[in-house]
Image 1 (cartoon, helix red, strand yellow):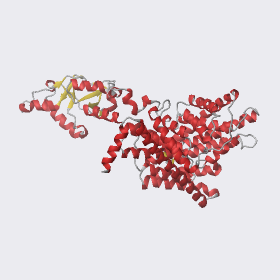
Image 2 (cartoon, rainbow, N blue to C red):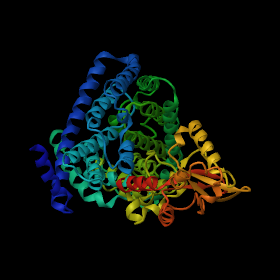
Image 3 (cartoon, rainbow, N blue to C red):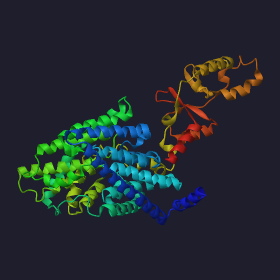
Image 4 (cartoon, rainbow, N blue to C red):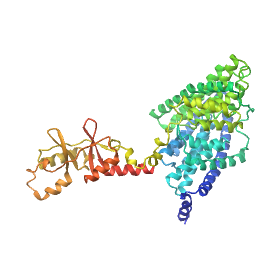
Length: 580
């Protein structure tokens, strides 16, 4: 009964109609917003509990213990490795390669693992967990309604938007982020409507518990004049080397832990230990650091704020702490730390400018906020999302001109790297859109991409069939993995002349028992050329059909036979591509 009911309900959402999609997006927003409330409450409880046990210098051990608990929970207890690391990047990868599908357990496991990591003082952001949790919730709902992949991907982004819009109290930027961060130079425009509905609904639910006030309570800043826009551009340029260092450091640490041959559940503990040692020197680098972000507008004052050297040290400390916390397998995000880094860079920049040219900047503190938006925009390749995010989180759109200038400068000079590895350049580079970009997807894949590389038995044209049979039997015994192949290339004086189809040959000589010693291989060959490895699968299929063949050999540029291509391989490839 339940199965029949869910099937009937699912038919409503397969229809290409806005009303059913809006209703489901709103439902996803309600559920995700509620889970975001639970997430923040659990974080508060965990943080209070940790500070009752650890205090002073002993706090440096908390991230290591939290990392160990997180590792055991992820890799031993729940066996959910996809919930480790940064959640946003895994959600992006799922969109491009898995049809937006996540296992049912991912959302609850990610929630608990992230609470452990962040609550114990690990340096990471809130957005990674909530975006993957939201995507996991949407996937579970879509699985219940048996949605097709195209619709499931769309609502997966809606879940991500709902999570971001809730946790940051930024409904518009939550929707923009979900459709913008998939690509470095493109948008997933088809999902924008459902993402907006889900994000706004999630924000409304979340705000019912935490209020509608902006996330950051900062002073109101006026519009920068034309002269100050020049310094905004310089700040965007300054973000380039820092974001490069951030991205490369994170990648290097993540690769190190991935290749390190130790149990996976121990890795987050080691990363947490490094983070804890850094927190001894820079306590501001611990956790999500949102409280410290609010103070950044005052750090730009060269008289009242901390020294520029301290701010520069804090930048490096946060980069290393986040890289080891998340790169080792701890559960968290890299979005929040990028806002933190941008704010500190902006504060340091303003302090230097005001120290050298006093009075140049009317509102030095505004540079911290502009740095936040610019840094995230360039490191995540989401310029509009980064700009709008800061405006919504501060409740001020007066910074918009300066934010736009700084963000665009950063993006323009940092196009070769991104904090999200799973991003692709644009829709043309995404497997999701391969079918709609090229109606004949077989033309986008070549024979050498899917052929079966194997040892090949070549036969001399002047061999007798009896001798050829002996060689084939011996070859199959030595290479059992190739025994299913029944065609063999034939050469005459070192030159390829065709193939011997053993099944066809055996059928023709079965009545000539005793005479197979006088029948030569050259009498039984099929004169067909060997395929070039660069030939696309569309042309290869036409060739096989024209010659009534099920398989054919493939040659490389040096005319050497390197593998086998069959109609079954082509059909499997087509089926896999169109289902992505």
